[in-house]
Length: 466
Image (cartoon, rainbow, N blue to C red; front, side, top):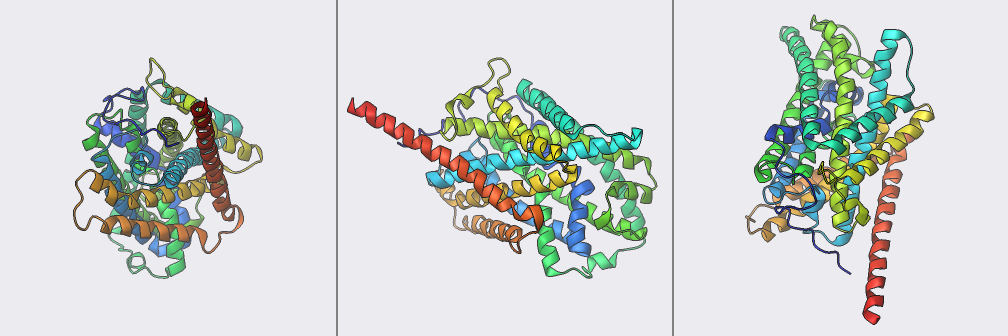
């Protein structure tokens, strides 16, 4: 039996509050899922350990790749607004099996990103508590606490959620920008030619660093999950997708150059630093901002947890409408007009693996890295398959032009190369197991989907016989 078509997204549907989010609040969803504060603090040092003087170049390439994806997604968003994000776009074009792959990959990606930043939250929270008192708080307790608060806000009011995320990221990023400007002011007198000439950078280091740099951007498209709640969504959402990709890309590239150069001024190795912004704040002559940025990183992790639960819940809601998950997940709260059951499910799915890992003594930054890498697989697959569907999507809407296939297929090839970069050479330790975990999760989702379809077909056959 074929699944019933997804309702027209431009008509009131799904039980969500329509037209409540301003363009800035819509942009806040994408920016918060990216968690731009976390990249200068946690991800750029990891990229530097691999790409060295090519760190800024890795981010420049990553920004270019994500911009290609953003161009494709913005094309979809100009003609369709729906809480299902990439799943709703691909559902019109791709065969049912690939449509299900996109949906489950995207859901897994948002949930795993939520798990990643929950790990980052308990790491930075305990870091601050330890510095202040010499003690630490249970990682399990902190994980449950941040998830419960995030899920409650996402369940209560999407407008409050968006405004909170906007202010959190604005304050955190502003402090980082101040530090970076001050460091660049010092570097102007000592132009870092080692970076500009990519001295000592290897091809393999750049490739692996590029993969990590791409993780800094994942979730930039999450504004598309607010299609039913944004004002004038066919205008504001495409802009939010493009703006978040370019804005964060510019910040990350400049931060990468400033961090590597700033550490060179003081003779330290960025790739081995556990508190890079403390060092850079001292280089810029504003040492007190180092502590404030660590606080900002902790709060940014909370904002990203909230953004991931908000996005994942809406994808899960539309998957239920499309027959990919249980029908009970279609429910929305009568007063709050939020996908209440989906919020609870996605919140639990995000926090449970973190609880298990934290109880086994895993460090917060390890959880951040492991779950973030797992999320990357889901995003890359969803991006690649969705972009491939774009030319036919444009034909169906009567806006196809010669040459419209160039960017989608170029983007697909770039995402394929990124996926290969994740898989070969095979990463060591826990990272080598992540592709199998992703495939196992995907298999479970697809198995449930096809079993559910077969059950419905059997019921229809019985009713027809009777």
